[in-house]
Length: 270
Image (cartoon, rainbow, N blue to C red; front, top):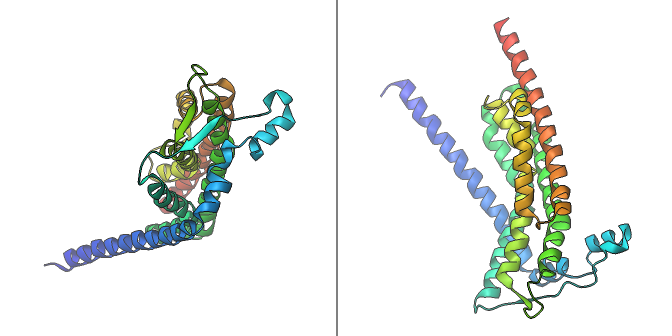
């Protein structure tokens, strides 16, 4: 076997080993976070997960201060469990999801270590910024999903009746799914500038492409807002505004990446 083939094979093995380390360390971080949540599950449910169904939730109180017409007096839902393993499953999955949220900054740090060897020397100095911005956007999305979208959804769906003869006894798994999906979806969506950064680095998109397709992005954002919010125009606008801001910021990110790429090419050609 030629030396170049040996080096190539060793390079692939090294990359696989790095990937294995990244996945293992990330899994351990999630597991640690999950154990912490599992040991405090009653607090997590009473003070965090079930809080948006109570009329005194901070979001409802802020709405009430804005206008008395927005005051929430009651959310007539009762959370029930209809499965023998329902509460146990809720305990496990809630611990894992919260463990993932807690471990996210560390996972981003491990991701940075994994991709760092493929970067130029002048790009490696932005490691701390990458970790901070990615973590900040994710946590911002989580908070937005929890304090804005989740209470809007719970209030709308909890107070929606086709007839008062039907009571809203909500299954625990259904309520958990609503909260988890809403919160995680917003956390991921808020990573849009980071995703655009890497797509721009790979030459798949640029600021001109994003500007030209702004009207299609607006339609997609409105559709996404309609999916993750109650079907009322106010909630959809509340969700669409930060998504539009993120899209415009992503255009700026792609523009910066494009300029840097062009300047690097100029330097190399010189």
